[in-house]
Image 1: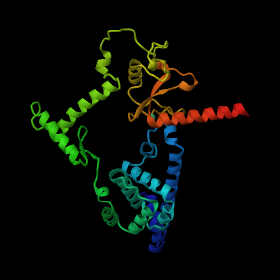
Image 2: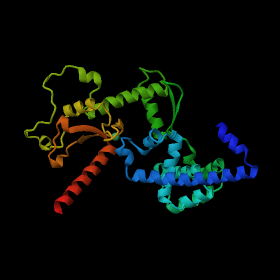
Image 3: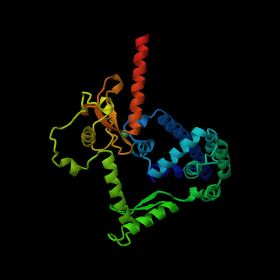
Image 4: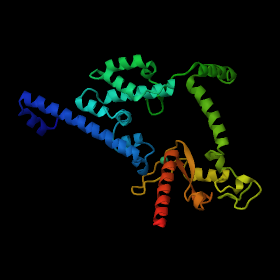
Length: 331
Ligand SMILES: [Zn+2]
C-alpha cells in the first residue's frame, strides 16, 4: 500500500474506516452505472469505428485498458442496461453487481443463439430478481436451472504457450458423424489423426476452396509469372458484350487480388486524427472510395479493403455528407 495512504487511514477509527469504505463502494456503483451509460453512447455513436477500432470490445481492451473478461462483462451489462433501464436502480442499491448483469445477458444470448428462444424484458427482470443479493456461485446455479446450455463454456480458448492454445467447443451429433466419415476417408493417408491434424487438413482444403471462389491467390501464387504480363489495374472500361463488365460496381478478379495484397488482406480504415489503422481481417469487403453512385469507378486506386463495420460506417458518413450537401443546396 502507498505509505502516505496507509498513514492517513491509520488515523481513522474503526467506525470511520468502515463508513468510508461503504461510501467508496457506493461511489463505485455510481461510477459503474455512469461507465455503462458512456459505453452505451460510444456504441450508439459508433465512436470506436471512427477511432479505427473494429469493435467496442477492441476499444475497451486496447483504448480503455480493460482486461478481456472485464471488457466482456461491461459490454454485456451495457446491453442489458439498454433493454432494461431498471438495472440502474438495482446496481445503485447494491442488489445486483456487474457479474449478475453479465450472467443474465449471457443467458439471453445463449438462449437466442442455441435454442432460438428470445428472452423478453419481463423475463430478464425476473431473472435479475432471482439473482439479487446472491453470490456468484448461487446465481450460476439459479441461471443454470433456467438455461442449462448457458453454463457450458462453449468456444473457449486457453493459451498454453506461445505456439499452442486449448480450444473447447460443443459438437453436435451431425458434426461427429462427419468427422468420423472424414477420418475413414483419410485413413489411407493418416491413420487415426488427432483433432489438431484433422483440422489442419480441413482448414487447408477450406482455405484453398474459399480463396479459389474469392479469386484470391496466396502470396506464392501471386509471385508466379503470369501468361499475360499486362497488369490489369482496373475493370475494362469499354462494354465487351457481357453485362457484368458494363456494371461499374463489377471488380475484375485481378484488380481484387491487387487490392487485397496492397492492403495486406486487412481493413485499411484509419482514424483521420490519430492515423490508427483498424487492420481487422473479419468480414472484409471491397469499398469504392469515391462511390459508384457519384461517378467512382472500379479502378485499383478507387478501391480499398474495409471490414464490414467500417464499410457500413463509411456508407453512413457518406450519406450524412450527401444529405448535408442536398440540404445546403436546397436552402
Ligand atoms: Zn475495420
